[in-house]
Length: 362
Image (tube, rainbow, N blue to C red; front, side, top):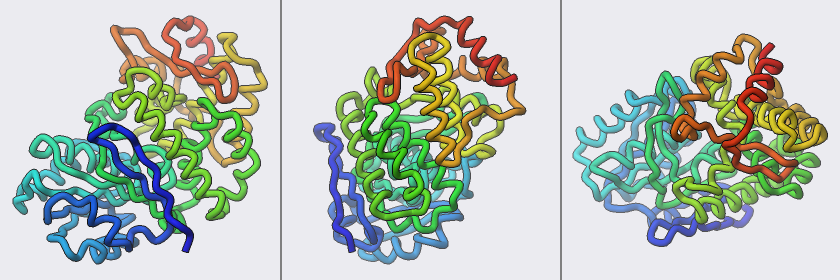
């Protein structure tokens, strides 16, 4: 079995490790050192439960361990799901000296983290991400929350996990569509500030899609390392961390307009990053080569490069106005000066943005 890699998110007293390796769900000693108290609640969904719940429950057999299984999918990432977790915790008299474990993809991680952040004003939680997207992005950094009908991730909190356990073997059961969606977040790291990694991804996309463990391990480690560095420098997204939102303002609008879950998050932000590149070129920030390279790598990964045909530019603009990055009615976008050169911009020409969207959506 390949060796386990341990990375660290350095946040003073909130620092925690990220474990990356194969077969980690079965390693009880790894979990025990991070569990607070004796009572543990595993939160998972009905896709992941048949695959890994029994395994993890066996690993945690030395604790008073219970579990709850939620419906799978972005459509269920809401306050009702959080309330269901509260019901289980309160009914079984979980106190502040407990640990909640998120076993699943980004949706389960976000819901569970928010429940842990708000239950009795905060309890410990562990992230056990089982999708590529959650392993490389959403499980690291402490962003938790749920969706609202008017906007994605509008209700939430920053609440860091006590550790992240990324078992690479869980990717073997990942449907191809979910794997591709996860690659969107991996590609993002190359686009924002790492041309060398972007070039590596161009050369290794085929191996990643084929679930080559060596290539996947490299991609996960590289992505987690960069995410850890950015979070350590800007935990509450006051500056540099906002670069991780490349394509997300456009992508979140797409997800909300279509109804959560119709396009996967990675599919929507792939199209969103292509829109960000297109608008960057239209605004004169980058050249056409950067746009074509951005579109080409997402196409090679089997991801959308254009927004959905049944959405309008007007609807996109309306939803973007509800984005979390709006401050005093002023929207900040993450744009590009080139591959690996993302930057924050709040003084762009709104007329040019409208023109870009009208062209893209018509």
